[in-house]
Length: 267
View 1 (cartoon, rainbow, N blue to C red):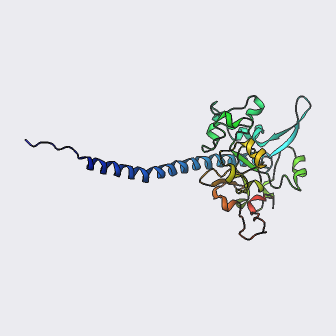
View 2: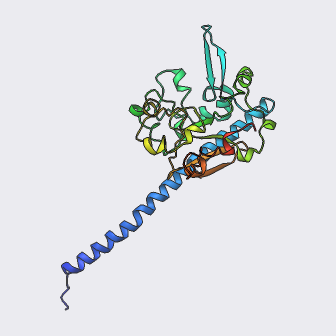
View 3: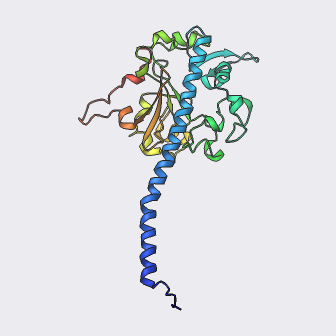
């Protein structure tokens, strides 16, 4: 009968080294795979917003949901109905069907209307998962493109009431931004897409409040997915874009950053 030999210390160390090497190779790959899955889920949520907007336009004579419009409430006070609070749009997004009561919620009903259900939020968005970070924020992960509304045509669209841009007003809809990912607000703009001023400094360490107070980052874009972002266009398709494609910073001194066409929805 042969005597069984045990592994030597050297052999054990070799096996442990091989396992450690395999872990070092595989773990980053697993992390990248998980982030890719989160990015896809986020893109599908944005696509749902685009499909809901198409349904809204069908009901409102070709007009998309407005970013916001004024309304007098029951107390006689003027309030702004943002796209997250638009009841018709919420119906098309099937928010009640998705709302399982999970995730961070507002302290009252009016704040809860700024909050999307957990299943419709970006899974990489830390601010919507933590009540201590999300205090006072708009908990929706996504932001409507405010360019155009805040400039010369703001007064016209504001007076239109509960309707937004008309489909036939949007030239080259496959190239014009409708929604993208925000740091915790209901709107974003071209200036907020400047990652060197905002995202590269605050990333997800800063709360929405810190973006606003410390960086002046109202309407900042969140490049949560490997320094890139999902973008929903006016034809309802979603693309993943690296931050350098969203906001093109020139290499020549004194030259202004490039205004990409995707930030001008009505031209």
